[in-house]
Image (cartoon, rainbow, N blue to C red; front, top):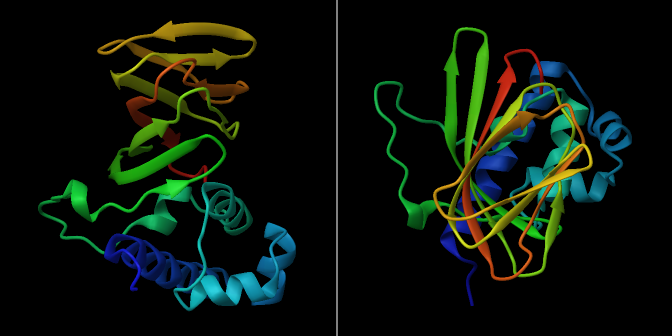
Length: 190
């Protein structure tokens, strides 16, 4: 049985982007392994388009390379128009959450990454602390957002925005949740 073509596409894009990022940084596989706390064997698999990368794995690689996570997942695109079909997006899963990266918006000194975020019923996803702002709009379900010890509960159509440099997490206290997540970062922050 063959793999889902969307998963294959994400693995291929990640493989190409990892190789390109390592080349830009003149970084050896051994050095990237040390900086990312991943084995050389795992990195070799990922660079060959194999393996099953998680949110945590790609996040660790992004930090080690000094790149935004979304840059490692971006396929080459037309500059004059972007069309993203829902069926073409493979999920990137992690602890309690599933992200689908729709694209990156660059304007002035800001970089904005656009995701669909799904959280399973009763699950909680801790997020990396970073310079920038996160915005979420709930599409379905009830979403609890924890920011620096405070909790806000949101329903469909509700919106929250907060400083991503504060400790934060998203949770689905009951049913599964689907939301749109926009992460604004200064251009130089990975």
